Image (cartoon, rainbow, N blue to C red; front, side, top):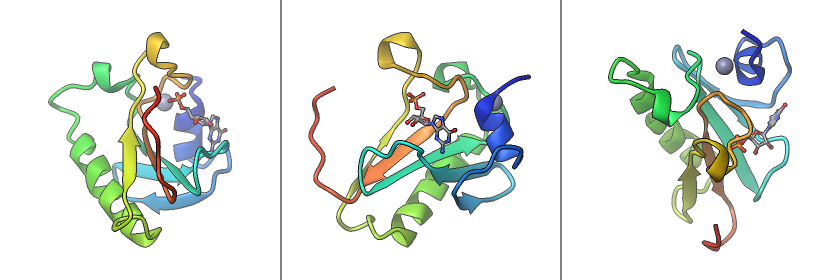
Length: 111
Ligand code: 5GP
Ligand code: ZN
């Protein structure tokens, strides 16, 4: 399958890695929306959160990774946002499930 984030998780396309375990890979977003902007992905290809199922136990691990990354990047106390865009109306541009972890500045909520 020709998938950008599968290729990044496999190391075939370079990325600025911030975290990795057996199920999860995380790297800096190429077009950051804040001082901290990390993408957290399952190594297994899943199109989006809508396509995930109960067998996808890596999702819990993505949240655990988010907590650890937030601590390591110093936004656990100041706060951060976790977002996953699902489908066209949400502007999902890469069809491989990913959590955006954004922080390091006060964030507005403006869609
Ligand atoms: P989406 O719009 O699907 O929710 O988010 C996709 C994100 O992937 C965007 O924030 C975009 O900047 C990021 N992105 C797209 N291509 C690359 C890439 O090649 N490398 C990295 N590090 N981020 C990418
Ligand atoms: Zn993929």
